[in-house]
Image 1: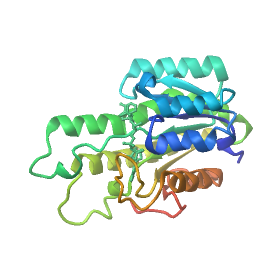
Image 2: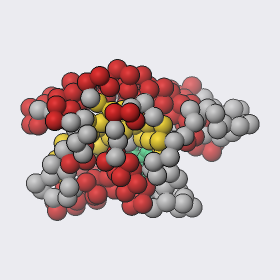
Image 3: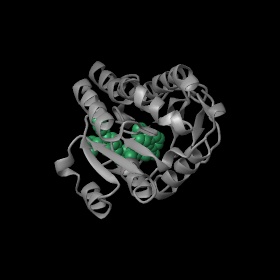
Length: 243
Ligand SMILES: NC(=O)c1ccc[n+]([C@@H]2O[C@H](COP(=O)([O-])OP(=O)(O)OC[C@H]3O[C@@H](n4cnc5c(N)ncnc54)[C@H](OP(=O)(O)O)[C@@H]3O)[C@@H](O)[C@H]2O)c1
C-alpha cells in the first residue's frame, strides 16, 4: 500500500491540539495538507505553520457540522487536487465532560456531541469518498476517525461521567466499521483510532502523552496500514482496542 501520509491530506479541527500537531508533523513530508478549522481568522498557530510551509499547507474554513461547508470543501479539493489520500476526522467536542453524568446529561449536550463527534465525520467521509477512491488509484488511501477508548462499550464498567462523549464515540466506532465495509473494495482503508490520553485542552495537563508523541504514533500506524486493517479499532501505538 502506498504511504497515504505522503499524499494529499485533509485534517479537521487543525487549529489546536492533536489536529495542529498533525499539520506540524505532516507539513514537511506530505504533498499537501489541507488544514481545516472553524475560524481561520483566529488560528494564529496554524497560520504561523502555513506561512512556514506555503508549498504544502493550505488553510481552509470548515465547520464540520455545516453540510454546505463540507460540500464546498469537497469541490475545492476536487478542483485543486483531484484526489484525496488521507482524511483525518479529528475535530471533536467533550460534551459535558465530567459534569455529564446520568443525573445531569441533557438533550442539547447529547445532540451537539453526537453531531460533531459521530454524524459529522460520517458525512465528511461520504462527501470525500469518491476523491478517496481516486486517491487509491496508485495504492490505497485511508480515513482515520479519531475516536476514544472511552467509546469502548466492552471497557465501560459501572456508572460514569462523560456520558454524551462516550456514547458519541461508540457511535463513531460503529460508523467507522460501516464505512470500512463500504469503501474497502475501492482500496480505501477506514480505521477508528484512539490517540491516547493527550495534553490538549480536552485531555488536560495531567494527560500522559504530549501531542508530539501521540501524533508521531498515529502517523506511524497510518504508514503501516494494510487493507486487512480496514474496520479495526486501534490506538496510537498500534495495539487493538475492544469494541
Ligand atoms: N486529548 C485527549 O486525551 C483525547 C483522547 C481521546 C480522543 N481524543 C480525540 O482527539 C480529537 C482531538 O482532540 P484534542 O485533544 O486535540 O481536543 P481540543 O484541543 O479540544 O481540539 C478540538 C478541535 O476540534 C475542533 N472542533 C470542535 N468542534 C468543531 C466543529 N464543529 N467544526 C470543526 N472543528 C471543530 C476545535 O476547533 P475550535 O478551536 O474552533 O473549537 C479544535 O480544533 C477529538 O476527536 C477528541 O475526541 C482526544
